[in-house]
Amino acid sequence: MRTTIKLIIVLALIILAVSFIQENPWLNDANEIHFLSYRTIPIPLSLIIPGCVLMGALLVTGSMLIAQFKLKKKLRQQCKKTSQLEAELHSLRNLPLVEPGIEKKPDTEVVPKIG
Image (cartoon, rainbow, N blue to C red):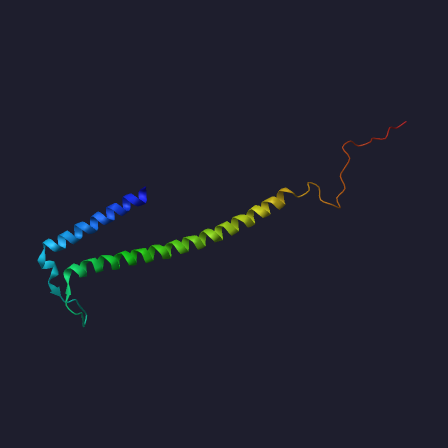
């Protein structure tokens, strides 16, 4: 259901953008992009603006993916460390209470009776 609603919203935005471009002829005027010493061929403004939006979306998506991969790596490391600590805790809980080789003292001492 959510996917359908999102798809309808995206399609509505595309239809609005296309109708806006058709009603404003100045958006179809060819413009050159100058950056440092580089120049592009004349491109209509109606292609430049969506191209810039698309490039921005790709940059944001790329940076989010990099951050997500770093977080997954850290999560894997933390899970491995947690399992090691749980194994150590389990082994410590199962240690015997009396060490082998040490004799246990009797609970009561026998006192010899004199005469």
